[in-house]
Structure formats: structure tokens, C-alpha cells
Length: 124
Length: 234
Length: 81
Image (tube, rainbow over the protein chains, first blue to last red):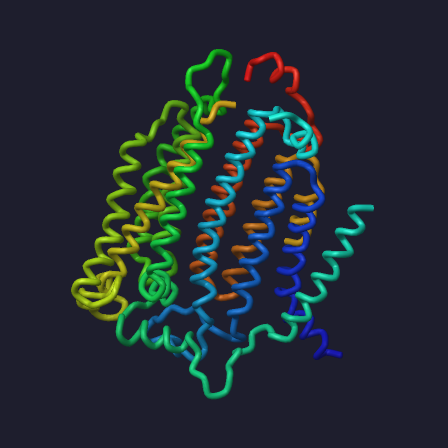
């Protein structure tokens, strides 16, 4: 019983990440407003970043920074490779969001609405 | 009805993703018998032959330096695309800017805070190889400082020419260091400076130089993004 | 964090939804710190909380605030564009 409980707590991070990804995907699929779709995409981004960092976690590990005289044993350090990957992914994600929002502004200026059904019905 | 189908689809997807990750296991040391993981190689190399304290920095700048060059290029392309998409003839009648003048308290406070924020950003990217932080984080913090000034002062301007000169110089430094390594070390971004001692400010060879260049480049690019979007007239 | 995500998807007022995504980023950066990734936590705190939120707010200011709003059609047809 207790083992199961601890296991559920341990996998809480994975569960949170997967749920956040699914919520963002739901928003991007169901909502009809362009801004809501961009918000959904940025939520998916957050969830994937959390998932990647969680894969590299080591139980009882330390941050991958060496400091002489303290705990600097490479064996108990957290995996640094997903962290470097996520560092890049966050900055690129911001660039993608900025370009998407610029396109949204441009579409609004052209059509006067953000509802994608109406945009589809309008003439260019 | 449509929502129901989507929820059902997502539930099936979530079930299979969860099953996969329960198999991987949280906090285990995903080791395969008899194989030395890349992680150990990177960690040993970082502390023994590069003398850099922060492993994430050494991976981003040294082992995966080419990816970082590509990433900075992608950011540059994003800024260019933003300027191209939002291009519009200025000075049309009946338009109102997003900006309006802030109150006295906000302007005085931002004037006080701005140097401190820029100093924090510079500290973060100069010490990127010693402590958590680095070029990307420091650049973003400096861009936040410029954002504060742009919001507080209605007619605070950042010269586009200055930004592009800083950005180009930083990019040339990055690529130049890489090519210098190609000439002296035999491969792109090879280390050609003495590595110094661990936890010294001047350690790690070319890593601090490249990270400072990345910091300037990211700060200039993100300030350009904010400036373009803020001066967009709706 | 899940609550903030659900709120930001369900909320009709896009300004509140944007603030909720800022809260997601804040919780996410605390989680990164707890997962022993201080570099990533710094980046997420600076980009997610400050820059993404402000760029969304500027876009909302330039377009519409509510999700189902169909305004400004007349203005655009009369050639103010």
C-alpha cells in the first residue's frame, strides 16, 4: 500500500507534464480563436520541457556544477544533457511564439477578426 | 460532440504516453550494462580537461557549440521575420500607439532599477562557466531591463543601427573563434587558449568569450523583438 | 500548475488567460529548481514570466480582448485599415 503511494508521488512529475501537454493540445484543437491556439501551443511547450528535464533527474542527485571541497562526485550528478537541450528549446520557443503572435496581429489587421472560421470564409 | 471525440482521443494518447514513461522510471539511473553513458564522459571531460565548473555551459558552448550557433541564427531569423511581417507605413492619421506616459513613481523607479538589472545580466553571463547562468539567461535579463525602460518612458528609443551593429559583432566573434579553432586545433570551436584552474574567472579557454558574445547577441535580438512589437500601431 | 493550465484554456477573457500562463511558467521554474536544473530555472523565469507574458499582452492590446468578440468589422470595412 505504502509502496504504491510513494510510486504515485514519484510519478507525479511525469503525470503533471503529460496532463499539461494534453490540456494544451486540447486547447489548440478545440478553440476557435487564434490567440487561444497560440496560448495552447505555448502550454504544450512548457509541458514538453518539464518532461525532458524530469527524464534526466536522478534520485538524490546534485546539480551538474562542480565546486571543489563539496559534493563534486560525477556519479551522483543529474544528467546535464537534457538540461542543455531544454535551455535551447526555451529560447527557440520564445522566438516561435513571437513570430506566431506577429502573424496573428497581421491577420487581424487584414481581416478584422481572430475567429478562424470567419477568416476561412472571407475572401483574401 | 466534437469536444467529446477530442477528449476521447487525448485520453487514449495520454494513456499510452503514461505507460511508456512508467516503464522508463522516475529518478532511476537509466544505465545499460557495460556501456559508459554520454553523461559520464561529458562530466569527466568538463572537470578534467576543460576546467569548467558548470557542465551545462560546457555542453552548450563546447561539445554542442555548433547547435548553439544554429540556434542563435534561428533567433536572428525570427527577429528579421518579425520586422518583415509587421512592416507598415508609419505616420498614418487616426492611429494610437500602445504606449502612453507612465506616472512619476514608475519613471523614477525604473530609472533607479535599470542599471541594476543590466549589471545583474552582465554578471550572469560573465560568470556563466562558474555558476548557474550564461549567455542566454544574461541576455534575457538585459532585454527585460530594456523592456522596463520602454514601458516607462514613452519616447525612449533604441537605435536599430546600434542593435544590429552589436548583434553582428557578437555573431562575427562567435564564428571567428570557431574558425580560429579550426585553424589551430583542427576542428571547429576547438579550444586554443590555456584552460586555467577550476573555479577561476579566467578558465575554460574560449568558453567565456563565446558565452559573452552569445549574451550580447541574445540581448540585442530580444530587445529588437520587444521594440518592434511595442512600436506596432494597432 | 494543472489548475492554471485548465483556467487559461477555459477563460474567455484572454488577459486573464495570459496571466495564468505566466503562473504556469512560475511554477514550472520552481519545479526545474527542485529537479536540480538551476540554469533552466533561470531561463524559464526570465523568458516565461516576463517576456512571453508581455508580448501576449501587447498582442491582446492590438487585437481583441475577449475570445468570442467579433467587433471592428465596420471599422475595417469603412477603410480605416
